Image (cartoon, rainbow over all chains, first blue to last red; front, side, top):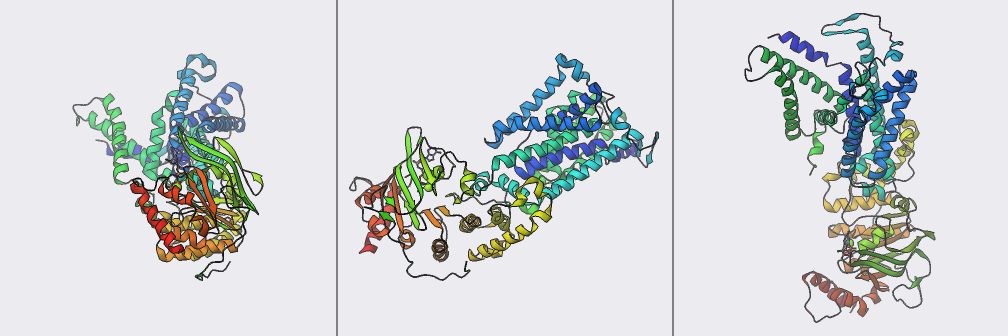
Length: 326
Length: 304
Ligand SMILES: Nc1ncnc2c1ncn2[C@@H]1O[C@H](COP(=O)(O)OP(=O)(O)OP(=O)(O)O)[C@@H](O)[C@H]1O
Ligand SMILES: [Mg+2]
């Protein structure tokens, strides 16, 4: 058994762009769910809009980077408005239903052959990064230290991703300690009480939905940068993994989503490496390699259940709060 | 505002509030709130059907009536938390129908809830600060820059501390509101409502669950509000309290205003006794009514 390779692959995830992207998406959900109490089950939809909103104009229209990012932002804000306008006046569960359905509609629209010319349908889009890569300051080649050996493209995407995550975390920290954050947390506890104090609850919920959705959108861009954009990335399970990360780290915390994402990806990589090699070595004779690939998701499911039962506040959550959760 | 609570033996009652005979819907000399034809039905049940009512300014008005009379529903309608089938009402001369709840609050009409709404996982201090109006840091972009709102926040905190002190909650300021007792939450909700310096405070059963020692100081708070120029409208089942502090009493039954008057005369109004005991006194009284019978008896005794 090559333990070195298993651990090596696992620690790579510590700083991978994917880890950063999931952390950012989870931070968006922290704003929605952890701070405002909005149940957005369509974070995958926001991520999809980020990914395609960036890739389509870059590839098909040759737009510069800033215009592509702006397209993603506009698409995501419109999506948030469409979701929010009819549902934010209703009970929290309506938003949950509408977001999960809308995200699926988006994914199917981008999968269908009808728009193949624009979306690339199930094969997606690739080689759209040229516009961004012309700013790559890293010299060509593969380098790094320890297990972290990447090519210059990945180093570039990795640095961008973590800078965006850091900025988003600082932004969230600033806004959640402000009076704006106080209103939003009040809405999470009891929106009628906040309304009775003269706050426009609907507007605050909309602002929160847009803000957390934008984080999802940026996460979508960061997630696809090192790879091709394919609609099958944006399954509902993506949203659930992001929720798993959020709960693992702590729902109403700033660093929780980041720590959660790191722990999630390191463990996932470790499990899959371990199971795959265990099957190879004949330790699990009842299992094929294909089954081994699925096993890790079963393990994730079990891990989520264990967290919710034994550590419901998450790694960084405030244990004191739990005493009052009904 | 003085932070001392001096128990007043006999509060000064405001009189001369109405014009003409004190019948239901009587005109007031200076009304702050006027409602006309406000009706709300739930399916076949008419919860509120108020033809005309005026709330006198700078006085303490009690809204009483048996369980299910429609008092809370009327509160909800007036404050924009529920929509009536028909009706108009105005606050300080400004029409209020179809105005959303948060705007009603901004206009200076603040209410509390019968089922207390404390914000459980916010600290007591944060609960209080949320009550203050016109905070620049409540804007998303200005909130990002503490320099813009820090000073205002400090002022709000000082004001909150003063109020918390008066409601004996200052020792709890850093605890979660969830850790307060039921009565303390009532106090917090009332203190929070006062953070915005409202013109009209509508309290739905402010005394329910508050211990007698504190009730006395709460009563004094309410009397202080009047001295500071505010108007108070409150729902209460405790007739002693109503008699003690109310300048004016409005009685509701089955959605309608059945009597109005100063506390002494209204208690003797046959319509009120009917409302509480049912039109047929001799008939079998439901279990829920016995409480009121007791209350009414006590009051009638008190009067003599
Ligand atoms: N949301 C609702 N749906 C249906 N019926 C309702 C609703 N809210 C109130 N009612 C009915 O309207 C009537 C008036 O209720 P309301 O809560 O206003 O009474 P109340 O005077 O505040 O009573 P209490 O003194 O017990 O608080 C009751 O008969 C109640 O059953
Ligand atoms: Mg009531």
